[in-house]
Length: 392
Image (cartoon, rainbow, N blue to C red; front, side, top):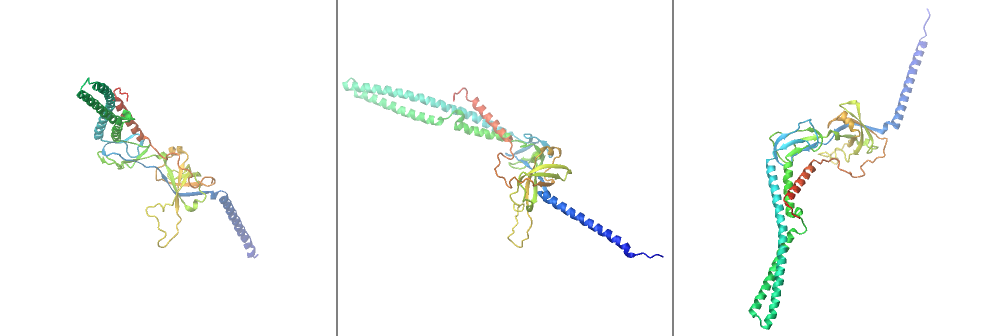
């Protein structure tokens, strides 16, 4: 029998194990080098968070006058366009007030026209009184010469003096009345007279109250939070429903304060939503960095100067806006949805805080301006109809 050598059998196994360990060490070393190179060249220029949510405007529809609801034009989830009728209130009282205001404006225009006519009449009266004074003075002067020659008696001269005095007094009274009438219309025309302006203001208020019995959508969006019911008596300011413009949504991403070192306004952002997953990548950009931490603006801010203190890394909201609105058409988002955002920090040319005030309003609507414009047109029509060819 031949005997086996145990040392010769163990040696190849040790060599193989040592080779594998060395190879593993090389792989780990290469992976560490690759990760280090990636991090310093590219990876450290990205910051991400999953503490991000869709935000947006929730435009409340509230009445401006009290009234009883007679019509509801849309329900939760309905798409409405700006200016669509959403709620109508009973307008019986408003119609009566509007008719009264129209009549008041028409009567005021006619009364003011009478003031202008009165000024013309007073001016003519002053001219007549001036002629009467001139005639009385001429009669008196002639009688003075006759009285000296004894042609007339002293009594007749006295009567002439009295007539001159009476004519002069009547002229003074007429001039005062003329000035009083002239002050009421001085530097005005009928349309700009204070009385007409006051009546027009009352008509404008009545017209707006009548228009406000119809509540329209301030913006284009989707109806949410409808609480109004038919027959309900509503008060000014009571929320009836809301309109959410989903094309104006944004993202509130809450980053740790340690992640904001290289973050700047305008940096590109890649966004992933929980509802669509990684198959849909939204594109956005940083619009603004928050002015304070969430805890600083909370209802009960932390009082770190009292009791024991434990440091907690704070989060600051970063506003991200979508740069491609067409993506929201294809893959709409709803307010409050969860998102993952990743900010590309390579471009640091932008500021950390806004450097200029807004050049235009962030959000606006003109549906209420249209109501005021219609009221002005109605006022002009009533004034014109009651002028009756007046030159004023």
